[in-house]
Length: 240
Ligand SMILES: [Zn+2]
Image (cartoon, rainbow, N blue to C red; front, side, top):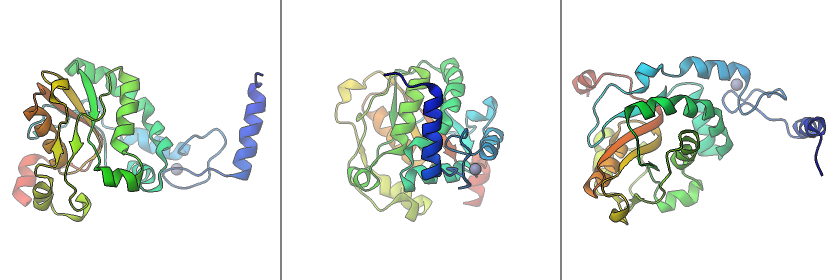
């Protein structure tokens, strides 16, 4: 049986009446035509996105070629990512669908990647948080760009304390030898775009890229949804 679109609209309107949906960023109640986030937050989001020149981060990372990023880690991106990560609202990643389509030609101009691969979560964290946000971002980017997604090529091997509880220097120590490549033959000679949700010090991505390179990957670049890095490297060295 085919449903008339209007019946579906009434159905959705009734659902919204019974279970009002709220904006994934500011929590205000959503109008029926608003999906995921409200119009005001969508406008703020559009204004926040880096222009093409800034989407390619202007700072070097160890083991990584280029690093791409869509947004600074600021409101409303911060609230949306927190909602996905801590409240399990994984559908909110669809809010970034147009951004994944937007970045695709820029990626293609820079390099033709063999595969995308997410920065992995440790198995025990995967159980408590249930899903890896970076992996879902990689799925969306793969669908938008047509670049194949390779899962499980990088595994986290040793569990350390949660990265957010540690300082910059401790993070690097904590990450020492925490990644491994279970099947190096699958990655030898290939180029990868590593996908992460939030880029902070860059230590995790550098370590993951280093592990891939040591296992034989020819080149590893990075794509992150948001980055907390705003300062130029020289300035950061001077203040740290
Ligand atoms: Zn909102």
